[in-house]
Structure formats: structure tokens, C-alpha cells
Length: 345
Image (cartoon, rainbow, N blue to C red; front, side, top):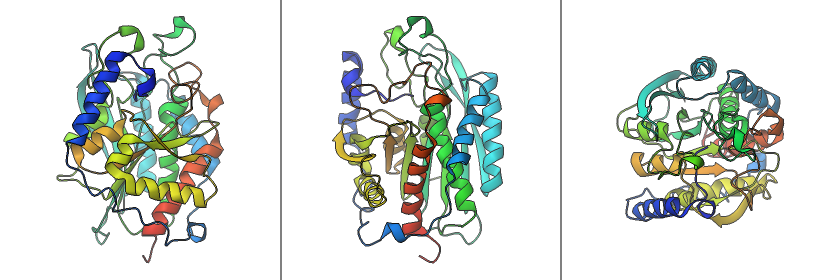
């Protein structure tokens, strides 16, 4: 995936990310405290549709089975078609946003953002909407693999990419059985994970998150704005740990605090850790900076390594995806959404 953990990158990348962070401090934000009132709701008592862990894991496996989901590959085309077909089963509208972009090395490619909406129907509430997102591409280079012979090879991206998408697919299926009171947009961003490889020794600039950059500048509906957004990244690890990342706190601390409160109420406090950590350059950064929708990042953060043990290695495969981790994140999001926007609220 694309984010740079600031403690583990070169000095050049550090400078770039700090500069971006300082610029973020000068950018106007939405009220980051507007979604913080979670204590009035007993989330254990909130009724939600069933989030099926086996189903979510199956969606991970189906993406991996498409082949490497890299720009310009047959795997990209197969998976884009699969995702669009599946989302049409549960959502009212599905848009495939085809876009041109250029990789760090000047290679021109085309990406496909998959945009699906629940409750995009006459009579659906326009008083608010929620944006949920994940990236679906897999990286072209296993540049963190312990074997240098693998550094220029693609890998499955079962956790880094497919896991977040799978949770949102199962979320869409579940919500379609018990409609919620507001529109929910689900976006699968493409060409997120193709930033400068470690072996290239080049500056990062904006080489990551191409799909979210494009959508943020060219939303699928004019003047798009959601009440808040949640990005999922690497949520299928066998030892999940999510911290309060800095860009998320800066732009959307209210919804971050609410989701962490819900997780704690459900017994997931050791997974959603109440710990403030450094900024990560991920899709939520560009959504916050360019679209104006306040968005948080639920992203794996393992102490002492970059995100998780198999990050950007050949080991990021189905063997290392835990369906119970997928369910935990799905249940927390469902409890949060139905607690605020369940039918009748």
C-alpha cells in the first residue's frame, strides 16, 4: 500500500511528508468535533444486520483469484469487472470512473475507481451521507521482501488492498438487507499502491494514491460532500492494531473518537488503541485536502515495523488474512452507522 510511516522512511521522504503536513495545517477544515457524541448511545444494544466473516473472507479470496491487480494487467480488468458486478447486487447505483494517470517513472496507465451508492433513490435522506473507502489495487513491486530477488515482482495484496474492499463489500451486502436512513457511498480507489519503490531512490512527490487524487478533484457528483468518511487499509491482519493517526485527528477527530468509543464498547479496545501516532500518507489525506470531506483512516499499525510483518512482501497472501479481524472492523462500522442512522432515527 502507499502510506509512508514517517519513522521508517528516508530523510527525503520525511521532508516531503512533513511539508505536506505543514500545508495541511493551513488548509480550512470541516468541524472536526461535530461527530464526537457517542456516549449517549448504548452500542451493545444497537441492532445491526449480520456481518458474515466467511463471506468477507470469500471476497478477499475472489479478488486475489483475479490475479495481480496492477495497472494495465488482465487482473486489473477482471477484478474491476468483478467488483462492479458484485456491488450492483446490493447497491442502487454503481459507477466505474475510468481515469488516466502517470506513475512515478513516467509510465501512463489507466485506473478504475469503483463507486457504489446505497439509498441513491427518490426519498432517501439528503440531510447527510457517509463515505466509506478502500483501495483495491495490488502493488507492482514487493520492494520490502526479505529476498532482494523479489523486489521487482508483484504480489497478491490480500491484506494490503483486498481486505478493506472485502469488509466494505460485506457491509454493502448486510446493509442492503436492512436499509439505513441516509445515502452511503462506497468507493474502491485504484492505483493507490504504485508509488516510488524503495529501490528507485527517487522522491515520492504525489506518486501514491492516484485514484483518490483523481476522484477528489473529479467527484462522481458535482459539489460532492459527505458528513464524514472512513478509509479502511490492511484490516485483515492476524494481530490487528489501529491507532489514532495524526491526519485523521487533525481533520476528523470527532468521528475517530466515536468509532474508537464504539470499538471499546464492543470489547475491541485492544484492537482500536487509544494512542496518538504519526501522520500516514494514505487516500484519506487527499480526500481531506482536496474534497473537503472529513475522513479518518483505520489502518494497521504494528509497533517496530512498517504496518504489518508482510507489508509489501510476497507474504501478503491469503494465508495471513484473518476473517475474525475482518468481522471486528465490519461490526464496529455497522454499530456506528446504525447507532446514528438506523431506520427510525
